[in-house]
Length: 302
Image (cartoon, rainbow, N blue to C red; front, side, top):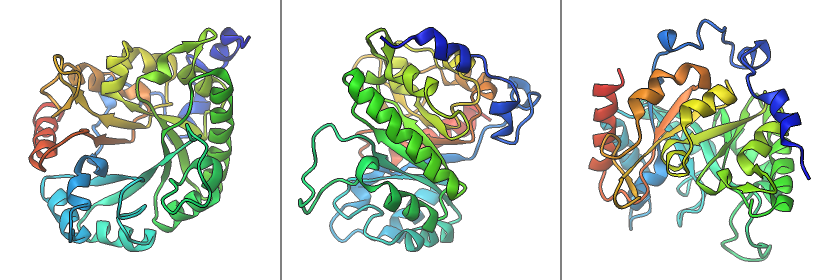
Protein backbone atom coordinates (compact mmCIF):
# COMPACT_ATOMS: atom_id res chain seq x y z
CA UNK A 1 0.00 0.00 0.00
CA UNK A 2 1.25 3.49 -0.76
CA UNK A 3 2.91 5.26 2.17
CA UNK A 4 1.23 8.66 2.41
CA UNK A 5 3.49 9.91 5.18
CA UNK A 6 6.62 9.64 3.03
CA UNK A 7 5.43 11.94 0.29
CA UNK A 8 3.68 14.41 2.62
CA UNK A 9 7.01 14.91 4.32
CA UNK A 10 8.47 15.91 0.96
CA UNK A 11 5.60 18.14 -0.15
CA UNK A 12 3.63 19.56 2.78
CA UNK A 13 5.04 22.82 4.19
CA UNK A 14 7.24 23.56 1.18
CA UNK A 15 7.29 27.30 1.62
CA UNK A 16 11.01 27.27 0.93
CA UNK A 17 12.98 28.48 -2.04
CA UNK A 18 12.11 25.54 -4.31
CA UNK A 19 8.42 26.37 -4.60
CA UNK A 20 8.82 30.12 -4.41
CA UNK A 21 11.56 30.37 -7.01
CA UNK A 22 9.41 28.54 -9.52
CA UNK A 23 7.13 31.57 -9.46
CA UNK A 24 9.87 34.16 -9.17
CA UNK A 25 8.48 35.04 -5.74
CA UNK A 26 9.96 35.66 -2.35
CA UNK A 27 8.46 34.63 0.98
CA UNK A 28 7.56 38.26 1.65
CA UNK A 29 5.31 38.29 -1.44
CA UNK A 30 3.58 35.07 -0.39
CA UNK A 31 1.78 36.72 2.50
CA UNK A 32 -1.74 38.01 2.87
CA UNK A 33 -0.53 41.58 3.36
CA UNK A 34 1.33 41.67 0.03
CA UNK A 35 -1.25 39.82 -2.04
CA UNK A 36 -2.88 41.60 -4.96
CA UNK A 37 -5.83 40.03 -6.72
CA UNK A 38 -4.93 38.85 -10.24
CA UNK A 39 -6.89 40.21 -13.23
CA UNK A 40 -10.38 38.72 -13.41
CA UNK A 41 -10.56 35.82 -15.85
CA UNK A 42 -13.31 33.62 -17.26
CA UNK A 43 -13.49 29.94 -18.15
CA UNK A 44 -15.33 30.16 -21.47
CA UNK A 45 -17.20 26.91 -20.75
CA UNK A 46 -19.49 29.21 -18.77
CA UNK A 47 -20.69 30.77 -22.04
CA UNK A 48 -20.57 27.79 -24.38
CA UNK A 49 -24.23 28.42 -25.19
CA UNK A 50 -23.07 31.62 -26.92
CA UNK A 51 -19.97 30.20 -28.60
CA UNK A 52 -21.87 27.15 -29.88
CA UNK A 53 -25.06 28.89 -30.94
CA UNK A 54 -26.14 28.60 -34.56
CA UNK A 55 -24.27 31.16 -36.66
CA UNK A 56 -22.21 32.19 -33.61
CA UNK A 57 -19.50 34.76 -34.26
CA UNK A 58 -16.51 34.00 -32.05
CA UNK A 59 -15.10 37.52 -32.26
CA UNK A 60 -18.44 39.03 -31.24
CA UNK A 61 -18.75 36.71 -28.24
CA UNK A 62 -15.22 37.63 -27.16
CA UNK A 63 -16.19 41.30 -27.47
CA UNK A 64 -19.13 40.72 -25.13
CA UNK A 65 -16.86 38.99 -22.61
CA UNK A 66 -14.35 41.83 -22.64
CA UNK A 67 -17.18 44.33 -22.14
CA UNK A 68 -18.12 42.87 -18.74
CA UNK A 69 -14.59 43.42 -17.41
CA UNK A 70 -12.86 40.09 -18.10
CA UNK A 71 -9.11 40.36 -18.77
CA UNK A 72 -8.00 36.73 -19.09
CA UNK A 73 -9.49 33.62 -20.68
CA UNK A 74 -9.30 29.91 -20.13
CA UNK A 75 -10.99 27.74 -22.76
CA UNK A 76 -12.27 24.16 -22.78
CA UNK A 77 -12.36 21.22 -25.20
CA UNK A 78 -15.35 19.14 -26.12
CA UNK A 79 -17.42 21.79 -27.89
CA UNK A 80 -19.37 21.13 -31.12
CA UNK A 81 -17.36 23.79 -32.95
CA UNK A 82 -14.02 22.17 -32.17
CA UNK A 83 -11.11 22.63 -29.78
CA UNK A 84 -10.84 26.40 -30.10
CA UNK A 85 -14.35 27.23 -31.27
CA UNK A 86 -13.49 26.22 -34.81
CA UNK A 87 -10.28 28.25 -35.10
CA UNK A 88 -6.56 27.50 -35.17
CA UNK A 89 -4.77 28.34 -31.90
CA UNK A 90 -2.89 31.36 -33.25
CA UNK A 91 -6.03 32.70 -34.91
CA UNK A 92 -8.07 32.36 -31.72
CA UNK A 93 -5.28 33.96 -29.68
CA UNK A 94 -5.28 36.98 -31.99
CA UNK A 95 -9.03 37.44 -31.61
CA UNK A 96 -8.63 37.35 -27.83
CA UNK A 97 -5.77 39.86 -27.95
CA UNK A 98 -7.76 42.16 -30.25
CA UNK A 99 -10.32 42.49 -27.44
CA UNK A 100 -7.66 43.45 -24.90
CA UNK A 101 -7.65 40.05 -23.20
CA UNK A 102 -5.05 37.31 -22.79
CA UNK A 103 -5.49 33.59 -23.45
CA UNK A 104 -3.93 31.72 -20.53
CA UNK A 105 -4.68 28.07 -21.24
CA UNK A 106 -7.10 25.39 -22.41
CA UNK A 107 -8.74 22.42 -20.67
CA UNK A 108 -8.03 18.89 -21.91
CA UNK A 109 -9.12 15.48 -20.70
CA UNK A 110 -6.49 13.41 -18.90
CA UNK A 111 -6.79 9.62 -18.70
CA UNK A 112 -10.09 8.75 -20.43
CA UNK A 113 -12.67 7.07 -18.20
CA UNK A 114 -13.62 4.86 -21.14
CA UNK A 115 -11.36 3.48 -23.85
CA UNK A 116 -11.74 5.85 -26.83
CA UNK A 117 -12.38 4.61 -30.33
CA UNK A 118 -9.39 5.90 -32.37
CA UNK A 119 -11.50 5.95 -35.53
CA UNK A 120 -14.44 7.84 -34.05
CA UNK A 121 -14.98 11.18 -35.83
CA UNK A 122 -15.71 13.03 -32.58
CA UNK A 123 -13.09 11.36 -30.40
CA UNK A 124 -12.28 13.64 -27.50
CA UNK A 125 -8.66 14.77 -27.45
CA UNK A 126 -6.82 13.69 -24.29
CA UNK A 127 -3.45 13.96 -22.60
CA UNK A 128 -2.73 10.23 -22.79
CA UNK A 129 -3.07 9.96 -26.57
CA UNK A 130 -2.50 13.50 -27.85
CA UNK A 131 0.02 15.12 -25.51
CA UNK A 132 2.39 16.41 -28.20
CA UNK A 133 -0.45 18.01 -30.18
CA UNK A 134 -1.87 19.58 -27.01
CA UNK A 135 1.44 21.15 -26.02
CA UNK A 136 2.12 22.30 -29.59
CA UNK A 137 -1.34 23.90 -29.83
CA UNK A 138 -0.91 25.65 -26.49
CA UNK A 139 2.47 27.01 -27.55
CA UNK A 140 1.05 28.17 -30.90
CA UNK A 141 -1.66 30.07 -29.03
CA UNK A 142 0.84 31.76 -26.75
CA UNK A 143 -0.64 30.07 -23.69
CA UNK A 144 1.36 29.76 -20.49
CA UNK A 145 -0.59 26.77 -19.14
CA UNK A 146 -1.72 23.30 -20.20
CA UNK A 147 -4.63 22.24 -17.97
CA UNK A 148 -6.35 18.92 -17.35
CA UNK A 149 -10.10 19.31 -16.85
CA UNK A 150 -10.59 15.83 -15.36
CA UNK A 151 -9.02 12.38 -15.39
CA UNK A 152 -9.93 8.83 -14.44
CA UNK A 153 -9.14 8.27 -10.74
CA UNK A 154 -11.68 5.72 -9.51
CA UNK A 155 -9.03 3.27 -8.23
CA UNK A 156 -5.33 3.25 -7.45
CA UNK A 157 -4.38 1.94 -10.88
CA UNK A 158 -6.13 4.88 -12.53
CA UNK A 159 -4.65 7.32 -10.04
CA UNK A 160 -1.14 6.05 -10.74
CA UNK A 161 -1.63 6.15 -14.52
CA UNK A 162 -3.12 9.64 -14.25
CA UNK A 163 -0.12 10.77 -12.23
CA UNK A 164 2.30 9.35 -14.81
CA UNK A 165 0.47 11.23 -17.57
CA UNK A 166 0.63 14.45 -15.54
CA UNK A 167 4.37 14.06 -14.99
CA UNK A 168 4.90 13.65 -18.73
CA UNK A 169 2.65 16.64 -19.42
CA UNK A 170 4.59 18.78 -16.97
CA UNK A 171 7.90 17.78 -18.51
CA UNK A 172 6.77 18.41 -22.08
CA UNK A 173 5.07 21.69 -21.21
CA UNK A 174 8.30 22.86 -19.59
CA UNK A 175 10.15 22.43 -22.89
CA UNK A 176 7.87 25.17 -24.27
CA UNK A 177 8.24 27.33 -21.12
CA UNK A 178 4.74 26.42 -19.96
CA UNK A 179 3.43 24.68 -16.85
CA UNK A 180 0.77 22.05 -16.27
CA UNK A 181 -2.16 22.06 -13.84
CA UNK A 182 -4.92 19.64 -12.79
CA UNK A 183 -8.45 20.92 -12.19
CA UNK A 184 -10.37 19.26 -9.37
CA UNK A 185 -14.01 18.32 -8.94
CA UNK A 186 -15.13 16.52 -5.77
CA UNK A 187 -14.04 12.94 -6.39
CA UNK A 188 -10.32 13.77 -6.29
CA UNK A 189 -10.60 14.16 -2.51
CA UNK A 190 -12.10 10.71 -1.88
CA UNK A 191 -9.56 8.41 -0.24
CA UNK A 192 -8.76 5.15 -1.98
CA UNK A 193 -6.47 2.73 -0.13
CA UNK A 194 -5.88 5.50 2.38
CA UNK A 195 -4.90 8.27 -0.03
CA UNK A 196 -6.80 10.66 -2.30
CA UNK A 197 -5.97 11.33 -5.94
CA UNK A 198 -5.37 14.95 -4.91
CA UNK A 199 -2.70 14.02 -2.35
CA UNK A 200 -1.16 11.33 -4.54
CA UNK A 201 -0.71 13.62 -7.55
CA UNK A 202 0.79 16.44 -5.49
CA UNK A 203 3.07 14.04 -3.63
CA UNK A 204 4.36 12.11 -6.62
CA UNK A 205 5.05 14.87 -9.15
CA UNK A 206 7.63 17.58 -9.70
CA UNK A 207 6.53 20.61 -7.66
CA UNK A 208 7.95 22.93 -10.31
CA UNK A 209 6.08 21.34 -13.24
CA UNK A 210 2.76 19.96 -11.96
CA UNK A 211 0.30 22.20 -10.16
CA UNK A 212 -3.37 22.32 -9.17
CA UNK A 213 -6.13 24.49 -10.53
CA UNK A 214 -8.32 24.61 -7.45
CA UNK A 215 -12.05 24.79 -8.09
CA UNK A 216 -13.15 26.57 -4.94
CA UNK A 217 -16.78 25.46 -5.15
CA UNK A 218 -16.15 21.76 -5.69
CA UNK A 219 -13.38 21.68 -3.09
CA UNK A 220 -15.72 23.34 -0.59
CA UNK A 221 -18.55 20.95 -1.48
CA UNK A 222 -16.17 18.02 -0.92
CA UNK A 223 -15.63 19.22 2.65
CA UNK A 224 -12.19 20.69 2.01
CA UNK A 225 -10.96 24.02 3.35
CA UNK A 226 -9.05 25.83 0.55
CA UNK A 227 -7.04 27.83 3.08
CA UNK A 228 -5.82 24.63 4.74
CA UNK A 229 -5.02 23.23 1.29
CA UNK A 230 -2.80 26.27 0.63
CA UNK A 231 -1.03 25.74 3.93
CA UNK A 232 -0.42 22.05 3.26
CA UNK A 233 0.90 22.58 -0.28
CA UNK A 234 2.11 26.20 -0.50
CA UNK A 235 2.75 27.48 -3.99
CA UNK A 236 0.95 24.60 -5.74
CA UNK A 237 -2.29 26.44 -6.61
CA UNK A 238 -1.40 29.10 -9.21
CA UNK A 239 -4.75 28.74 -11.00
CA UNK A 240 -8.18 29.12 -9.39
CA UNK A 241 -11.73 28.57 -10.54
CA UNK A 242 -13.70 31.22 -8.71
CA UNK A 243 -16.98 29.35 -8.57
CA UNK A 244 -19.78 29.64 -6.01
CA UNK A 245 -22.32 26.99 -5.09
CA UNK A 246 -25.88 27.38 -3.91
CA UNK A 247 -26.32 26.00 -0.39
CA UNK A 248 -29.75 24.57 -1.22
CA UNK A 249 -29.51 23.30 -4.78
CA UNK A 250 -25.83 22.32 -4.57
CA UNK A 251 -25.39 23.74 -8.06
CA UNK A 252 -23.07 26.55 -9.24
CA UNK A 253 -24.41 30.08 -8.97
CA UNK A 254 -22.99 33.60 -9.51
CA UNK A 255 -20.06 34.47 -7.26
CA UNK A 256 -21.19 35.97 -3.96
CA UNK A 257 -24.60 34.32 -4.01
CA UNK A 258 -23.61 30.93 -2.58
CA UNK A 259 -21.82 29.43 0.38
CA UNK A 260 -18.13 29.73 -0.61
CA UNK A 261 -16.29 32.12 1.73
CA UNK A 262 -14.35 34.03 -0.93
CA UNK A 263 -13.29 36.89 1.35
CA UNK A 264 -11.52 34.51 3.74
CA UNK A 265 -10.00 32.52 0.88
CA UNK A 266 -8.66 35.60 -0.91
CA UNK A 267 -7.40 37.04 2.39
CA UNK A 268 -5.21 33.92 2.67
CA UNK A 269 -4.38 33.63 -1.03
CA UNK A 270 -0.70 34.50 -0.73
CA UNK A 271 0.37 31.00 0.25
CA UNK A 272 -1.36 29.45 -2.76
CA UNK A 273 0.94 31.02 -5.35
CA UNK A 274 -2.12 32.18 -7.29
CA UNK A 275 -1.44 33.85 -10.63
CA UNK A 276 -4.75 33.58 -12.49
CA UNK A 277 -8.37 33.42 -11.33
CA UNK A 278 -11.17 32.32 -13.65
CA UNK A 279 -14.87 32.72 -12.98
CA UNK A 280 -16.74 29.57 -13.94
CA UNK A 281 -20.45 28.88 -13.61
CA UNK A 282 -21.72 25.57 -14.94
CA UNK A 283 -25.27 26.06 -16.16
CA UNK A 284 -25.13 29.83 -16.65
CA UNK A 285 -28.10 31.02 -18.69
CA UNK A 286 -27.03 34.47 -19.87
CA UNK A 287 -23.90 36.58 -19.91
CA UNK A 288 -25.43 38.49 -16.99
CA UNK A 289 -24.46 35.56 -14.74
CA UNK A 290 -20.67 36.00 -15.14
CA UNK A 291 -21.16 39.78 -15.36
CA UNK A 292 -22.68 39.64 -11.87
CA UNK A 293 -19.69 37.63 -10.66
CA UNK A 294 -17.23 40.14 -12.13
CA UNK A 295 -19.01 43.02 -10.43
CA UNK A 296 -19.09 41.22 -7.09
CA UNK A 297 -15.37 40.49 -7.26
CA UNK A 298 -14.53 44.06 -8.23
CA UNK A 299 -16.63 45.39 -5.33
CA UNK A 300 -15.70 42.90 -2.61
CA UNK A 301 -12.24 41.61 -3.44
CA UNK A 302 -10.43 44.83 -4.37
